[in-house]
Length: 260
Image (cartoon, rainbow, N blue to C red; front, side):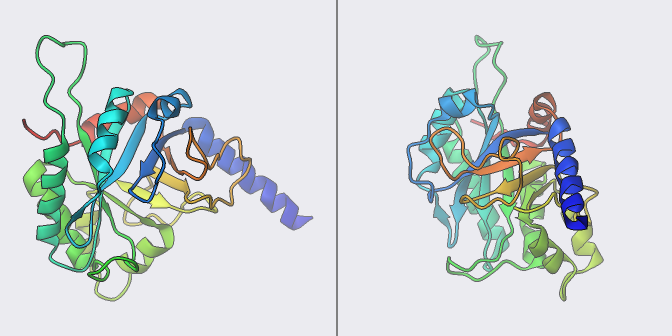
């Protein structure tokens, strides 16, 4: 009985989260093999897409440019992430920015005043690297990466990782208070497929919560936490802490606007 009551309380807490948050961001990479239907995705409430742009060692995601074009045509916000490794973080940051800038559509002209210039939300994927060459990125390398992004764009990128991994890395050996202070300037994108993330220090809370990926999701009810979208049966879906208007403002505030 106690276990059942606890389950009910957790479910009610999660429903409270979705009541003031928007389930409106999807992330993609070249591992998603289907031709994504971005028009259908938007019709189902998606507002923004964050796509892998680069990965070890200094590779470009070959799906990035094509999907950016079709997602933008569908009216979706666009973001890019780099999967970090244990090699030179400055080279990684420069390669990431070069890839994003070279794929960015031209700035809209003054004869199209109703349309805002589109920016790109930047993210460092700070996961354990077990399938690419180069090893895993250290905390000090993550710091160097985000500081390079800030130096060149004027904006700190987001940091993505699982709740467990971020806690393990940022409070493990080799991590310092100075490292945590720098990384706390980044906005937080955190993954937990079973519960709302709680261990978010040094951040006060999460901005984006990835609650499902590859069909893995222990959250119910499924109507509030769907695992698919459009023609993706097993999508990577994310909840933003705020409504869609706040998401639009957040994207505009944190996005990079490459020149050209």
